Length: 255
Image 1 (cartoon, one colour):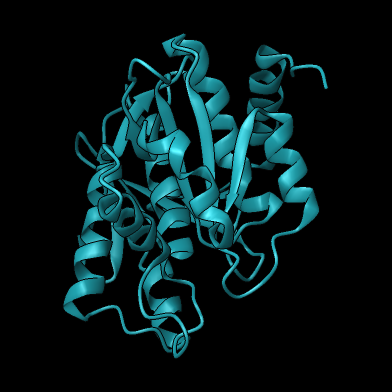
Image 2 (cartoon, rainbow, N blue to C red):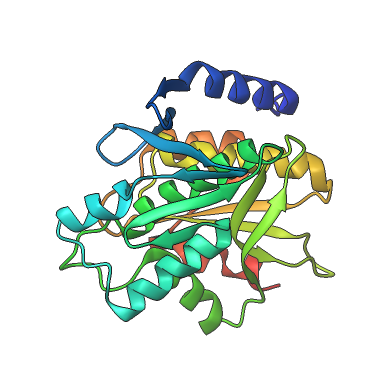
């Protein structure tokens, strides 16, 4: 299979973003509908307002209130710590249930992107079958690495050639035997949830030029991962790692 035209991927992704963005004036700011979908297949929306020189971009409390209405308790210590960790990774703040960022005219696009990434990450990390899943998938992957003494840096921000920063769940440093490895933990694998990761990899690989290997840990505890997801990852030189087969890939990660 031939390698994709990386620049074309970026151009098409940015064109898709522009086509999917819809702005509506709210009187005291604007409502921005994005092409990214939540777990209900609704478009994520952010709200931009300005007071003096300050620009505030907010989800208006949507993500956390929606999860709580679905019966997910966010306020337990363990889940609260995970939420803060996710938000810190994207530079997003929390006020009550509202997730928001503060921006300036020069970095507004980047800050909107960071907030949307955080909304998707929180939505993905906390969506689970409540009685049956005792811990978050990200924590499961981290515990697997710790148990086998895999060296890694968690939640690393990597800039891409597009100008966007991308949060990678785990970065395993280069060794004598293997190149740098970028690992993403995907709790609910689908074409929608892997799309952002594929763009991030394409964007950052060109910027870093280190020949990094990419892995996607896929949670197949509750459902089988679709063949279309495996094919899409493989087409972009990402090694799919179903959670049930994680031991098979250990040698490539711990060396």
